[in-house]
Length: 628
Image (cartoon, rainbow, N blue to C red; front, side, top):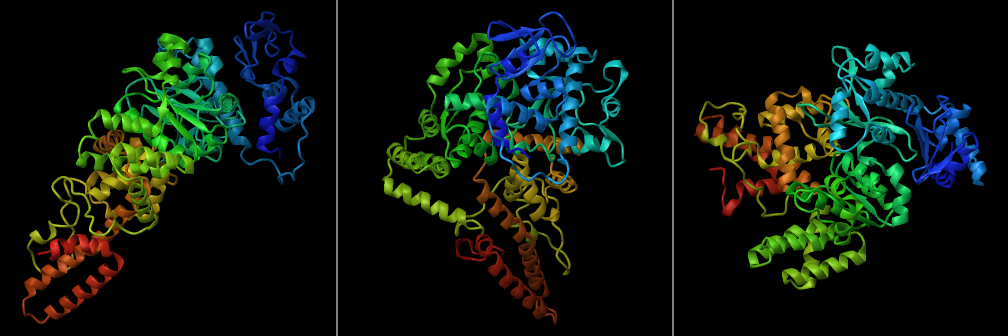
């Protein structure tokens, strides 16, 4: 096995023009080199070698890849042999490492992804059904040749070129159905039928750091949901741990000593085509800690270039805080109103982007600018709110110098002594460090009509004595359910945790329970894959949750989840206590009353021991017993 870092070193050191030029007569054309294609045997100079990217591409047969793939395709080498041969030429010594017993078990998955990538590329160029995709790309000023260079593809909804479906074509190319499923390229339904995961979508290949295709992002060109669909989690693809275009951008990032982070695939491609190469994007979700940590390996500074609307700002600030936790310095570039990086550069070229990047400001300064513009620093109440909104960013700053600067800046802006502000930060961190409920005396926020929170509606019902009765289905979700579902919507890691720790019966709002039950039924969390299985109303609720996250931003995730879990777990016990108390009142002086009282006291002691904060919130408000 050759270490990944050595493979990267070999790739960076490889002179792709010299290596390919040994077997192809190349002539310089601008910044590229052109020659006859060694693969399809043409005589015209349709074969391009692009040294800046370390890639080759034929505009006729569409063969494309890096220097390793060239050696493999041209001379029949396997991957390790190609790496070792180029390392020998570059004078790099590959350290010997004990070989794995047998081949890499993931190799068939890499092969399946590579074969599918080639097939999807042919569909984009040749399939009749792909005409809509070709027109769409033309409307975004991307020619078919450019799309080929960028590796874009198309997944037909039915038959591909020559009448073959995706599954038929893969079978003829030697890719087994089970491998397609494991690689996330096909899905097996409950009835045993297998179908392609991507249908009727423009596809963007996602590469690992070695440049191997490991997954795809698919954009739906017609009506339907979801608009973007990624490959599911597989042994070779981890959505929260990979970034779009990092395999190409990493050297440019090192050279520039900073990374540009944008939201979408087209934003990345437009900037790359304009010569701005140190740009990456998360894979359709909020930036994760793993992605931020990965970026920290290549640059100490990140510039966030997200949309300027409200949703874009919230995504910017969430990503910024995540980067700060990894010790990355974060600056925010403000886009002109109504523009995104794609449209800005498409209309004005890289020159239009220069003043935007030049005027980028520190993350916290940008937040303070917005608060000041919106009048949040004018009076005591708003200053308190402004302080609460900025504390998460101060806490996120893991770099001690950055944190010191942030403390001084916020103290000055809000008009609070720096020592007091520092004490507040430490106090909040101490509270977050615990895994219990909310701080004492802090009630759970109320919403809607109060139903679903286990507080008021149980004792309003009258009926015979008996076991605890299930409450009527709430018309609105409780605040605790709402917070948990917002986190589930935001990231698969929270969905996975909720699957393990939350019982379905704790979720009482009808559509939240539908979503959560569907989630628990999955063998593996994939928040895109099961969307279609929800009812129309369930899908609508899911979309509304995503919109609310974009509008409101997320709370402090760890504490919000812990507090909500605590509330949901306590709710059945508290309802049982309220029901017993109602039965005691109805029993009067009957013989069974003493048994009910004993049960009630035992249960009260258990609740006080396990859920002391919930007991205080629900039964000790204003110094009295609120259950009356």
